[in-house]
Each structure stands twice: as structure tokens, then as C-alpha cells.
Image (cartoon, rainbow, N blue to C red; front, top):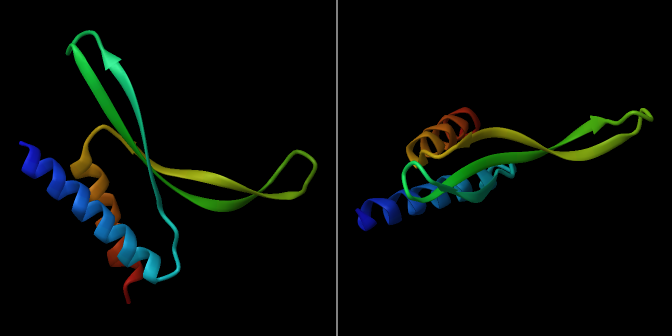
Length: 89
């Protein structure tokens, strides 16, 4: 079990670094909550990137744009892989 977890973390970081080499910054954040139903902590992974967005005063401001929020590391890896496939050429 732990080997798979560490391997997915490693794959996520490698994909993140590869995407960064193409000058696209993808942040991987985490948050946790306790699931009373499952009686354990659940980790949520968040993929985001900085974008420019107009505010109410018509000024451009940088803001985090959430790409994906999931408790599944496999979904996160698949999303990062999709991004990598799109930017690698």
C-alpha cells in the first residue's frame, strides 16, 4: 500500500517538474478532513495555476484557478498527464 502511495507522489512531482520546464506553473495543494463514516483522515488534492482576472473595479489581478479537486491521486496524475501531453510539443 505505502509503495503505491509513494510512487503516485513521485509521479505527480515528476509530471509537475516536466510541465514547469514548459513554463507552465501547476501547483499541487492538499487539504485534509476527518470522515466519521470512514473513521479516518481524507486527503484532498488540488491542482491550480495562477491566472489574470478582472475584479469588480475592472483591474487585472492574479488569482488561483482551480483545475481539479479530488481525493483520488490517480485522477490527479491523469490530469497532470493530460496537461503534460498538451504542452510537451
